[in-house]
Length: 185
Image (cartoon, rainbow, N blue to C red; front, side, top):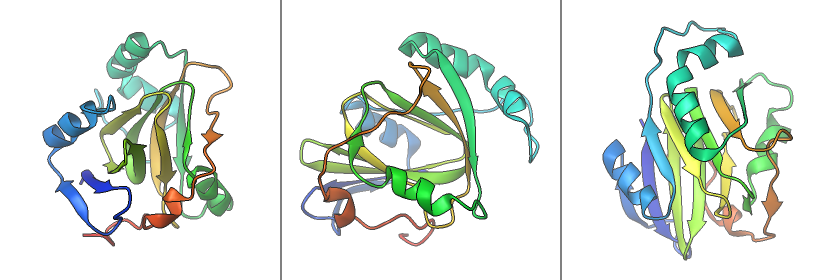
């Protein structure tokens, strides 16, 4: 289940808010310009579906978000626990960074943890199946897929070269616990 925890950025063990209510998550993230939505597929998606089948199942929402935000490219990424590059892929996103375009991800399956750092607060959002998160350009954040990642996500891009991270050099991401699904309840 989706979860938002908000912390003071100097107190990673003491949440100021802890909620699993989707409407409350959306309201809290909207305060910092971020987006949280829940989508439903327009048709069933079978395990092992092709990227084209996944995109077709969410076409109305994909078209809406692309038009609203000016995205030109959409793709599907799938990471499984047996991926031989899982450690390398995880490490790529673990340090605080920002983008010069919105980062929007929709979780078709599985889960991951987006952590946003805004105005001395840390917003930790566990995204699961059917969750969309939109992180505005310029907001510093990091993403943890866990040590045994398992997710399928739709990614949206303005630029054809896709994801470009600008790393801050801050060590704040190391001060907060790493993501292990189910371990923090």
